[in-house]
Amino acid sequence: MNNLSSFTALDSNPLSKPRSLGPHHHGPIHLQRPRNVVVCSVKPSVAPPSSLRVSGSPNQGLSRIESLTQVSGVLGCQWGDEGKGKLVDILAQHFDIVARCQGGANAGHTIYNAEGKKFALHLVPSGILNEETLCVIGNGVVVHLPGLFKEIDGLESNGVSCKGRILVSDRAHLLFDFHQVVDGLREYELAKSFIGTTKRGIGPCYSNKVIRNGIRVSDLRHMDTFPQKLDLLLSDAASRFQGFDYGPHVLKEEVEKYKRFAERLEPFIADTVHVVNEAISEKKKILVEGGQATMLDIDFGTYPFVTSSSPSAGGICTGLGIAPRVLGDLVGVVKAYTTRVGSGPFPTEILGKGGDLLRFAGQEFGTTTGRPRRCGWLDIAALKYCCQINGFSSLNLTKLDVLSDLPEIQLGVAYKQIDGTPIKSFPADLRDLEQLKVEYEVLPGWKSDISSVRNYSDLPKAARQYVERIEELVGIPVHYIGVGPGRDALIYK
Image 1 (cartoon, helix red, strand yellow):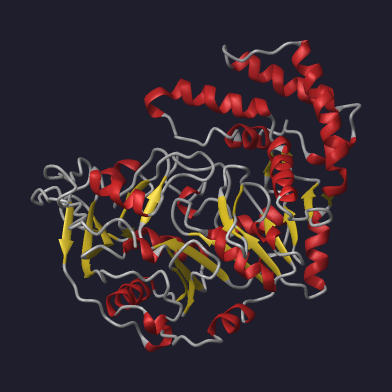
Image 2 (tube, rainbow, N blue to C red):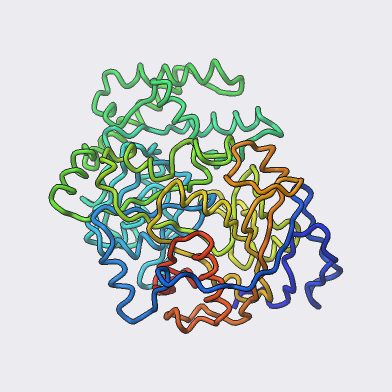
């Protein structure tokens, strides 16, 4: 059971009365929202249309997975950290290839093996625990070699063989340690306007890629020209940032280090565009694992508080070199509530101790950074926007068990302007996002532990009402429901 039993309310309405959180909490808690004025409406849960309703059965899971198309994808629907890695790990048993197509070590996917051992992956695709799966790091990924080798060493030391099972695109760009330094220096420059990046060097590396002076994996095969290319990057960083230390000794050390890296990486390097397209022609099954999520998309997210790649469906084609027509089922992964790390708008955020309680119940701390995640109610308006962009065929609702002790649960169902005018689409303007009102529906909680439930029909009625209300509001069926971190803690609907 999650430690929320004394949690009588997570009310984000600034007009609400102070609430006591029980005998273990001293004094009333004010859950104030300085930015967003909230309008709450109470509406009973309504069963979804029959076309969305799927009854559970012992064979439901296998049939769900086997019905997925030859090329399928798992993408995040919020601001990342939705639990994509777990679903990928489970689905990977039925796919020949699992591929990453964008991002870098800013992704943090936590998975568990059959014995319950925890693995935190950042670059290696989450299919690595399945022995028959080939893992591909595509051309759209930025690769930090020290981090990649550390992950591989950690997997090997825990009995997970990586030899011959990981391919790195020769077109992928290399992310150097200096990119991480530049990331931190730039955040320092921005001061109060900082983005809140993971400081993993992702933005600076993609910047070099876009201005066309980046270094790619294939360049490691040409050590005669590698030093000049690296010198250009380091000199540029030194001229731009006063605190960046660079001299001939730094270049010499880096070149020597990357000579060793090049030798070690060589067996992993491949033309993954050819490999993946050959696999498609041979009717092999390919699962694409997205990093981050649509609300962090460089084009569609809450810009500039976004990542530097395209974690939405379009990034699959550009990040792997496959045609749009081969893409089939896309599963959107969404938490039963909402979290985000770093700065930026968060319309349904719960401030104060209410957010703290949800954070600790869900262990909402970043896999990559360890930073506490901001927490709030499920934002249906943002979810519908993500579904529209990606065309999801189904959803994976994760961490439903975290809400188990709440007496009532709110759903942010719509946005309105200050004067009450409905907002029909997700705003691009940050000022609009900061000023809008969120309209909520309040649903009853189920007040019972669901972590051992494995059949949808065995969930409490209120939990099923919550799931089905989400389906009705977004118009997409929920096929997978997470009720715990373990591999088996998944309900197929």
